Length: 393
Image 1: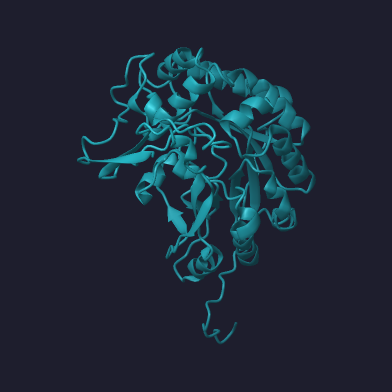
Image 2: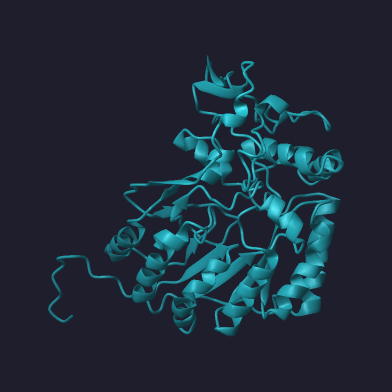
């Protein structure tokens, strides 16, 4: 019967290298892309990653192999499981100089959308899980997030500033239909008069238009939807459980008509794969009533590089070498450059050209002439349970 090897290894030399400082030559397949590391197609049906290699912090590397009984096909398919994340706090702080927020909330760890390019995949390694198939099938929910948020907003030293949601994993991924954690968070933010910026690629955001439209009247919310491609076939392959491009545009239209400020994110832009669609996406979003737009160049930190390479070889083998050549042209000769202020847009002539194309296309459809500004003037600190009212409250 099929077995799983458990080779004892050291933390420094055990797992396939993922360093981006000395990438393999173009055309060379990294260890993660070797055929024996890939999971059978039927077992990962509806998923984005091709493999489930152990996380980089694990002391054991697990690789499935057939011991001669041809029974690998008997292994079960990857099914979505949801565990409870018992976080003590829900607001995460950052001091990154190249992003427009200093705090965020992630209702979930992992994301069932399965976007193969997702830069959040490496965070699953901190949980002792694989950034591959585990990231999109072994999920963690934070059911206490709304109550934790209310407690944090109620502290005497809390100073309100926009909270970003969806910057790591999608708050409207499929399991939100059952858990409704995101809706609970919005209810807390609405009561407190606290501004929020939301990023998603799910049409489920339309469920909360009642709350979002009320918050928009007080300049408390803006919503960005990521539209990676207009090609449904490419979208299904690259983002297997995310909403179709048509549904995302429908969500943008519905939000805009409800008075909610919307942004279309052309993200990520992948050279020689979807960069030819920049103008088409912006035009379609403008017709849906969108007034703002942004873009992000493909990012390949840590394990994402190898997962994306596997996906390319499996789905677009004829473009693999060309795409990685162009990526390195925009990343200083490497697969990824994490430097502030360049990691989102890249460097070099090709990155410059993409930026100019984006700006010109925005100008033609009238985008980015004005940007919605959120306010903290409505903030009212929630009353903590058992808190005594002041004399003049």
